[in-house]
Image 1 (cartoon, rainbow, N blue to C red):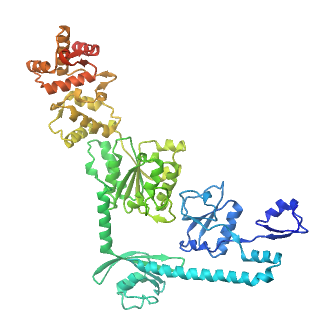
Image 2 (cartoon, helix red, strand yellow):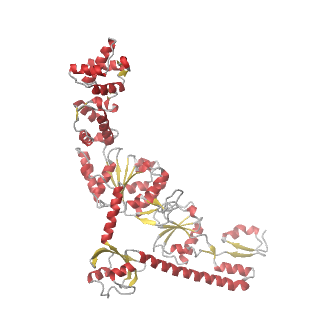
Image 3 (cartoon, helix red, strand yellow):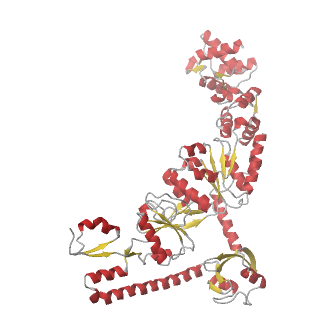
Length: 615
């Protein structure tokens, strides 16, 4: 039992819980009034009016109390939403998260976290404690002096903040100008002063130093962008209206300097390979199915909505993404492509969003710009989107909804103007049903979508693509035999266009003849319904000759086979004979021995020879 004591309770409910252990007759019971630490509230000064803020604390009651204190302290211009453990997150649309020392309870990656520190005892509670221990008369002047000192200190801080802000706006190269609804200038930096020859407090409606055209722009109620020439220099004027202060904010940018800067940025990105390499004219096709996909893509390109491209591996998803970018209004901006499955989970977040200095061990000094920032004004292509981890899916959703990113370890929201084109060869809806992929992200991405057909569904394109790759890789003297054409057209092409291109490279590596025969094709293409295709006449001649020499127990090698081929009219050089011998050996039809033993036909070789002879 607690007796003859002064009890300070941090919540009224504690008195009821602890009543059995307190002698209320001999104890003085005080209820602590807690307030926010005003030294930490300066972190909230720069936040924009009507910012959407998630307030996080350890219980519902304490979270509501924090919001009450923030409103009571003068920060009532924000939109607050309470959040505590086991509370359902109703939205992902927040500008900031505020917490009183409970950073570990804040949802990760949702918005910058501002820690205002735990609540402290207010001035009245301190006075009540001093009075209870009979020290108020003795210490009242010191307590009052300290309180007044705190107020004065905060006044100096505000004065220093204002001085700092003026230094910042005057260091900006662009002109900055703020004025009220009547045209009276309330803020102007040195750059705007030099351009317009105007000062603080002057009236835009009466000043003779600006033209009538420019005055009309300033005083019109519409928020707009216009170009004006002042002393032979073009400036881009961008005006917006701030509802909370009923004032206008205008920026003045040197148009030529901005164009030069953007051109330099484009050149740097192009050097690094961050540009769209393909156009719709680069898509080789003859099929109506592919023409339909191209026509649809050209229409999608004119919209600025995000796009989801679906299709099997090797169907040309990046080719279409590149062509869409080059046909869109963003064609002069950067095109950044990233394969989400190629990066480990611990790196993909910092690659996409960048990081601030000191964000983690090994982080570069000065931090790193992310791919979304690099793609600003252009397009970012996210291939294999189905492979991104859940944490990144949440952050990506915010980018799509708000066009804002937050660097790893950072606390500043960065606005990005980026169009996202995502692609996958997986069934995303199946991943959604298995709770592997976020449902809200899936439907956000699929606002516009494109299905690319596999090569086996557009067989009219097989031979024209084969001829294209053959010419591109230097095989202009080669042509296809009718049997080879049939094999190519009948094959399933599970790897689509990529497999077709690899097939051309394989053929050119081993083919010494002008006519591409079936035996020049990779093994997988030479199988039909589980059986191998029949031998061509030259292979039949080689197997038959080797078999005849084996029966007579005479040795035979490539030199002898080359000589006999000339007699039979096949005219095979030693090199050509060696290529065919290697091919027959790889199929298991013959065995090669060193020295005088030469070549030997196998059981498999005799079987295929018998089957061919029977035909």
